[in-house]
Each structure stands twice: as structure tokens, then as C-alpha cells.
Image (cartoon, rainbow, N blue to C red; front, side):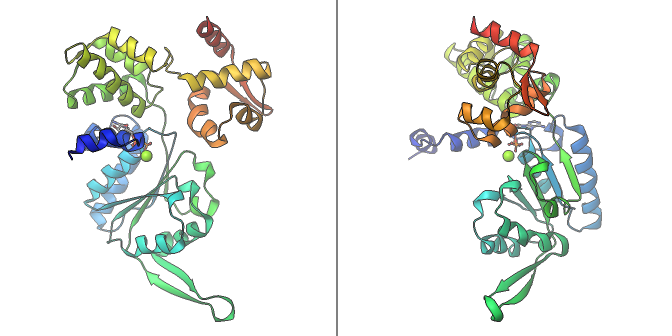
Length: 334
Ligand SMILES: Nc1ncnc2c1ncn2[C@@H]1O[C@H](COP(=O)(O)OP(=O)(O)O)[C@@H](O)[C@H]1O
Ligand SMILES: [Mg+2]
């Protein structure tokens, strides 16, 4: 069975998405656009580690999904000439699983823990001494016969990723030397990313099509890539590899993305606050219950962009929508 065929049968869109994403990942720092503060910090840390030939200091990357945290971790490992080990925080169920991963690391390897704020607390505790002293304190047995065993770990670098650094426990957060925040991207930066990736996909993009895609990407490279791949389908069906603005408009409307880059869920959040709560303020728990959505999804995935663009306002009594949001909803429901 060819790889393509297997993927076609697989129902797992997550896997397909990951595969497509891996094709468009920046392969070197020169392809990593924007986030200049974060990149500058990381550069110094990498270079210092290379000069010392010791492990790079631990770094925490925080920010909404799709802004380039995983991609950056990959570039760091590459620049250190080390191996990258990727794990997802909530997927580690037992202390022993994490201990096994840690004891298998080579000196200067990078351990990337995604969604590190969702790790089980008992597993998290293993990390404290590993990060600080490159040592594991393991308790063997129970009750009066219990004893502590210490196991050495190679000096390694932990890169943690989280949607919000405030979600981390204090002991864990203070063990990171650098706490780096990712911001949403400017349209010009997204345009550069889209144009680089169009080249990788062998596409030509007209300039108004490019700026339109950049403007509607919700400040997020992952969404920019998704839009680009959708528009490519239109271009292919139209029999070419050149993308024009009309194809962009058609794709965006099919994806239900509006001129501000808001999608259906963004607009639903705003209109629920307007229709059910008179525009707010409404507490986050009541809002999530009405939307039948997870609180963390709303707070970490949707809210940051709505707040940044001034559609949503946070007040001590809850969330409110702005005049801009009301105008936008009115326009959209016509
Ligand atoms: N700074 C960047 N420059 C170029 N492309 C980027 C950048 N950040 C993210 N991307 C693109 O967006 C995709 C998603 O980024 P990713 O690193 O997986 O985000 P996160 O881990 O923060 O959710 C990547 O595959 C890459 O193509
Ligand atoms: Mg990621």
C-alpha cells in the first residue's frame, strides 16, 4: 500500500494535518520569521551553550497554538547539534515513564514537553530535581521500608511549551531560566511566511492574494498555512499553479473566515455574549456552559485573539463585547 493510499484511508485528520505541517516547517533560523525578541534570546542561549559545550539552559515557550513553539524547539536542537525528544505532558501517565525518558537522554539533548501545564502533578515532581541537579529522586517501596534512590541524568535542556505560562505551578515555572512569550504575527510577517511556503509548494501568488491571506490568518502561521493549502486546491482545480485574489475569497468563504480572520466559533462567542447576556459582562464559566465548550479551549485558543483585536474586553465582572464586535455581528448576520 502506498503511503498516500494509507493516508487517504486514515480518518485521523490530526495525523494528516501533522504530516502537511511538517512539510512547511522552517528548516533553519533564516526561515523562521518574526518573534524577534524570542529568537534573539534563544540565539544567545544556543550560542553560549555551544561555546561552553554544556547543556543549554531550560526555556519555557508560551503563547496561543500555532505560533511556532514546536518549530522553534526543533531549530534549537538542530543548532545545538543535539537530538530532540518530543513528548506531550498529559500523555505521560506514570512517574516511571518520565524517568525512563530522562535516563535515556544523551548530554546536551533537548527534551520538548508540549502542554507542560497539563502534566500530572506526581509526574511533574520528578522534573524538579532533574532540571535543577540532573538527578532523579525515586522512592522505592512504601511505608517504613520505603527508601529514596538517586539516579544521575545527563545534563539536558528542557523546553516546555504552554498556552499560558500562568497555568504552570510555581516550582516548575521558577526552574526555567528563560520564560519566552510568543505574540500574534503582523500581516507582513505572515505574508512572508505564506510566500516562502508557496514556493515550497510550487505556487505563484499574486500580491493582492498574498496580502489578503495574510490579513485573514488570525495572526497565526498555522492558520496561514491552512488557508494556503485550501487556496492551492482551488488553483489546481482551475488548472494552474498561480493563485489570485478571487480564489482566496472563495476559499475563505468556504472556510467561513471573515475579513478580520474570525471563524465561526469566534463569531459564535461574540454573538452568544450579545444574545444571551446583553453584551456582557458575563463570567467565563457561564459563557462556556452556554457555548458547551471547555473553559481552557475558550481561554487559551479563542480569547487571546479576540482580546487583542478589541472585539472582547475583560472586566473584573467578566467578559464584555465591544462596539466593534457589535457592528461586526450586525454586518455578518445580514
Ligand atoms: N516563525 C515562523 N516562521 C515560519 N513559519 C512558522 C513560524 N511559526 C510557525 N510557523 C508555521 O506554522 C506551523 C505551526 O507552528 P508550530 O511550531 O507547530 O506551532 P505551535 O507549536 O506553537 O502550536 C509550522 O509548521 C510552520 O509551518
Ligand atoms: Mg506545537
